Image: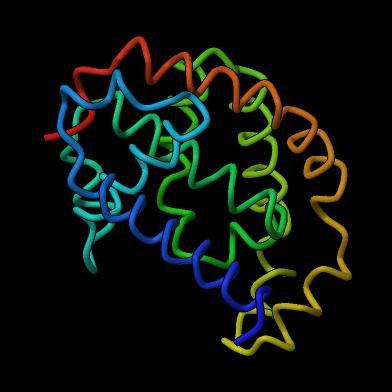
Amino acid sequence: MNNDDFAFLSLIEALTRKSEEYRRLNKEDVKLIPNEDLKEAVMDWMFEKVDADEFIIISKLPTPCQDVYSTVTIMNEVLNGGFNQLFFNSTVEFIEMAHKGFVSIGLPKLSKLLNQACQVYLDNKEILEKYDDGTIESFSDSYEENLFDDLDMLFSKEEENFEKLIIEYIRKNETYFGD
């Protein structure tokens, strides 16, 4: 094993250990987590609670937990593959919850963009459904419609604001995170 392999394995081990630690998050520990790890920590803690009924389980958590989980989930989905990807995946269940969550964390602009994307989807549902045959090829072909490109760009421009405000929101609601 060379030095690069050793460094990579050490990094993976450290990240896994940290992730496992956050899955057992205690309420008292939340205030001790550095801001750069906070979003990941609370998401790991909530994700540990999830099984096949992700939406139902998250829906039973307190509102601040719902706000964080849904907005982070939607933000990650859109940043990863755009609104097009969002509407093809099960995370679409979190749209209404995220709509409220974006407002709660102080980003009504993202809530508005999410609503606009929903309207584009509804206006073009028949077009998009022809790509929904469960194959990666059809899904990839659906991007050629370019239905969400402008909204994807506007949404992604808010990433920095989102990252700042989600940490502030978690800090204001620390008592809701952890067991």
